[in-house]
Structure formats: structure tokens, C-alpha cells
Image (cartoon, rainbow, N blue to C red; front, side, top):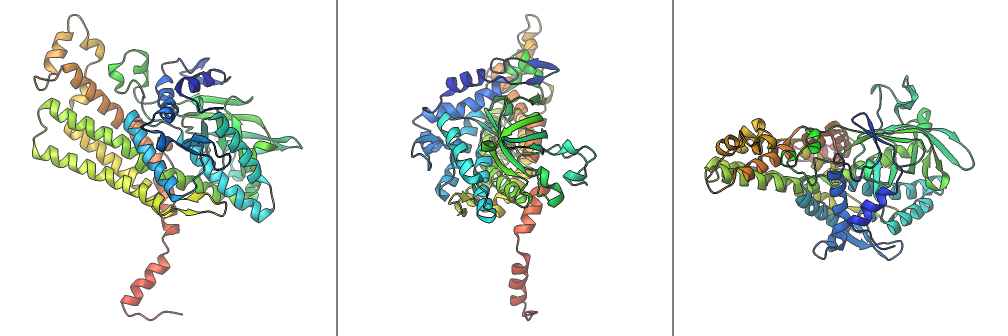
Length: 482
Ligand code: SF4
Ligand code: FE
């Protein structure tokens, strides 16, 4: 089957029998619903760009399984060059969407599962890797969008999965038979899930022997019996239901469109099960996925920041402040922060190395460092955007007021900046800045790909403090202790 384009992707979503709720209602058709269409447009662009000669070098590649041309989003990294191209691709797409295009989570989940199943089979004599390769071939052949499903609701964070008052706080196996397994629980913050074809489920944390039933990795269609999606709210999402300008980025929306996905006794046939009770490998799968996903953030958030910088510079021009030296200095700072993020993503990719499976893995220390930087620098970039844009991004009247037959003239007159720029354009740019720097977008930079503390745990684990101490002791003339 040839790679899908944007329309084929949308049409393929129509064939799914998704069980989606939003705003207290069951949604029969996500594809044409204004609440979802911006997210779908962003994901559709990943399909469209595969057919764009200016983008296909980054967005497509050759399958190592079949030798066929495939979307990079379904690829297993075969070299550091593949890892670098991934980051470049993410920045390029984010430059066009100004927001999350969702398809990377499943991409990372597939790479993590590919590498870990290989190592698991080598250690335990299981046959998960071959199974996963067959699943991957199915994904590549049908050019499917896969959601990466890691985060469990977690209940009482001080307790292990098997100690929870409610055993469903983490996804677990409730039944096994010769045909497959039955799983129960939920996955939270599911980016792009309501417009994905498949979900690739992984454990959310390292597990001990008592937690064996929680060691489960498997693939489930997003419309499988027992799967229910409850769509999350975003800042200003109701604006999608009544107007265009006030949305800021009407075409692509704000971040990914997340949902809580409930798994009510979902049956998974063995050919889609890639870990079942092998608790010792849960931690490795989590770390692989987390590092692959943290690699991305200097790419996609770097690309989003490019747009924020552009919007901020344009706003300064529209308001007549562009020549002020402090404005230039703040823009310089925004660029510096953005390029620092990007450098980290490129570095962790260039320093990648092959895993036993042959697939390449990023440098986990540098990948965690870049994501940790995102949790700070994006806030600073947005703070500077707010500083330069001015307070009116928080007090703007609605587009209905702008177009009102009586009062529209006052909005038009008093929100004017420099004479050469139309008031509506100044308002549009302000709304874009509001959209890109507001609540949901910022929180996603903090917690997407794992909360800051999760990176700090990994950073310290990778730090090799003993080696650093011995470097210092040597220079200080302190004799080795053993
Ligand atoms: Fe991809 Fe970035 Fe969205 Fe994550 S936040 S899915 S890396 S675009
Ligand atoms: Fe994310």
C-alpha cells in the first residue's frame, strides 16, 4: 500500500469506530468536529509532507524490514544520521504547524519496543521481537499512526502498582489464555490518541516481582472493544466552536489534543503482545522510550519557538517597538535559548549508538538534559514574548467585537499600532502569541515526555559521579583510596 496523503489519512480515521467523549457528549465523528480538526490537521501534515519534494528527504526513508519507501514516523533508526534527521524533521514540521503534530510518541514507542524485545528475547528465550517486527511491518505497510501509551494514572504515588487500593491505577493483565491476554486500567495524557489508528501500550515505571501483572506491552487498535477515550480540555478550546481569529492558530490548534484512555477488559491476541509479566524489563522499556521522546524536544519545541520568535518580532514591528535596543536584546535571548535546545537534540542524536538489535539509541544523558532545558527555556521564551508583545494580548476583545457593526470601529481604532499595519493583523498576531504561550502549551513543555524530576533521576543515574570525583582527586593530589 502506498504511503497515505492527508486525505487518505482523514478517510482512514472515518472507518474507525472510536468511542470518544468530549464536553460530556459522545462524539460520533471526530474528523469533522471543530474540537478535533486542528489536531487532525497537524497530524495530517505529517502525511502530506511525505509527498512534498521539499520535505520528503526528512519525512520519508527506506524500511530496513522491506526495503520499501516508508514514512519516517514508522521507521526504526538505523544510524546516527537517522536520529539527526528525526530532530531536523520535527523542527521543520513544527515550523509549519506551530504546535504538536502528535505522531512522534508512537514513533518512539516503536523504537523502544523494537530494541527492548530483542534484548528480552536474548536474555529470556522469549519470542517477542519477531512478533514485534511483524507488527511493525503491518504499521509500515499501512502507514498507520500509532499513539505511544505509557503514562498510567498512578493513584497514590507513594505506593507500588500492586499496593494500590484500586488495582486498576496501572494497566495490568487480568486474564491470560491460549489466545491472548485481557488488560484493564487506563492511560493518561494520550497525545493524538483520538486520531490514531493504534495504541502501543508500555509500562509506566520500573517494576518489581510483586508487580509482575503490570509488566505489559502490547498493541491495541484505538477502536478495540473496551477502549474508551475521554478528551481533555485545553486553554480557550471553546473558541474553536465560535470563530477563527480568537483561536490564534485555527488551523493547527494548541499542543496535541490529549485524552484519558480507559481500557475496560480489552482482549489482546498474543501476536500483539510484546511483554507479559517480564517485570525485569519494564524499567528498560520505560528508559528507552523516555530518552527517545526527550530527544525530540529541542526539535519540535525548537521549531515552535521559531514561530514564537517570529510572532514576537512581528508584533514589535506592528507596535513600533522593533528598533528599541531592549527588544532586540530580548529577541536575541529567545534565539539563543531556542538554538541551545536544538543543539541538545542534535547532540544526543549524533552521540547515539547501536543497541544489540542494531537499532540506534540516543545518548540518554544528553536527551534527558535537553528535555530538562525545555522545562525552563520555553517558559523563559514565552515570558520574553509576553514582555515584548505587551499587555493587550491579555485584554483583547473578541473577534465578534472587532466585527460588530457599532463598536467594531472602536476596536479597530484603538487597537491600531503603526499606521501601515491593519488592526486585524495586529490582533491576529497577538492571538497567535496568546495561543502559543498560554496555559496548556506551557504545561505540555513542562510535563510532556515526563515531568522534570523524571529527567533529574535519569541525569543523576547517568552522571558517573565516581569518575568525576576521581578526576578531581587526581588533580588535587589526593591518593586513590583503593
Ligand atoms: Fe512530537 Fe513534540 Fe508533539 Fe511530542 S510534543 S508528539 S515530540 S511534536
Ligand atoms: Fe509530548
